[in-house]
Amino acid sequence: TKTINKIAAGEVVEGPKSVVKELVENAIDAGATAVTVEIKEGGISYIRIMDNGCGIPKEQVKTAFLRHATSKMSEIEDLEHIFTLGFRGEALASIAGVAQVEMLTKTRDEETGTSIEISGGEIKNIQDTSCTEGTTITVKNLFYNVPARRKFLKKPATESGFVSDLMNKLALGHPEVSFRFINNDTTMLHTAGNGDLKASVFYVYGKEAANSMVPLEYKKGEYALSGLIGKPELSRGNRNYENLFINGRFIKNKVVATAVEDAYKTRLLIGKFPIFVLNFQMNPSQVDVNVHPAKLEVRFKNDDEIYEFFHDAVSKTLDQLVL
Ligand code: ADP
Ligand code: MG
Image (cartoon, rainbow, N blue to C red; front, side):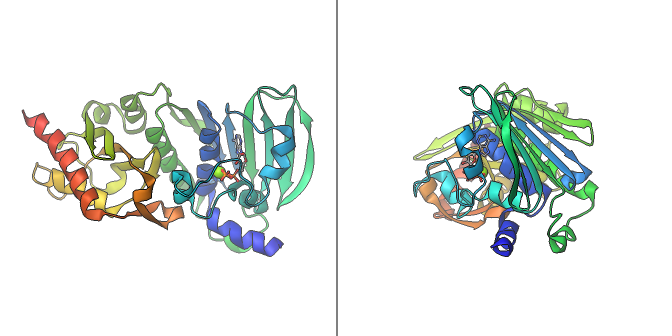
């Protein structure tokens, strides 16, 4: 079974970035308002995620690390379910199978917290401990027991770049959460978490970008879109500044990217890419399929409708700028 666990872990755990992604999503699911992410050597030797969320009750700590253990509801139309497709309850088990993991966790109602150490899927220690409410999880020496996978990790600078990009997306997708990202003892990002998207853009892309973004609000039928888009002069040379979230979750989608870019095209921005941070509220049943969960690509059931909706939303907002 060990081999099976290790192979399956490869699906969820590609590298430090996917570890951070899963653990931060858990923190957000736990209602955390402040999340600190610390990595060393690109996250290969050390990742620590600290949250002030609800914590895990003592009697559930061991279970949380079992494959398919989840405390979260997953109805068929549950958005979470669609986007994580088959990965429900996999993250902690997978990560603990391929690294040395330590967790401290405490709920509000408990007098003492719990500390657990798991390496290569084996519980090494579990005991009561004193700690504050919330969860701190430390992941050391990723793939220490799977040399074949460890070999495929990139250089620390590259891996930390991936984590840094992810932290930016998380900050833009969750302005209501205060994120702190520390790379090799240097704070790279620290957001206020006051719910102001413009403030998040300021932290992530800087003052010039934040000042050149305009609000977009658009609704049609079951679709609602809101966020910030850059004025046409604020263009970029690549798609890295195009941020689409569906109900707070970062997603890549070609149809949306094309619709937004087309809306800009007739307006100064020929051949360049816009900056945008848009949150799309929709009925998850309209998401056809998760093309590649790890790559965050989705396909919609009705591409034409989606194209038109985004094209209209952005065009109308840009039209108003000129007036
Ligand atoms: P999933 O998130 O799909 O449920 P995970 O393996 O990521 O699966 O987590 C397993 C369970 O452990 C979660 O359902 C949750 O109950 C608990 N858990 C994990 N991380 C945290 C956290 N940071 N705070 C509170 N509970 C957590
Ligand atoms: Mg999870």
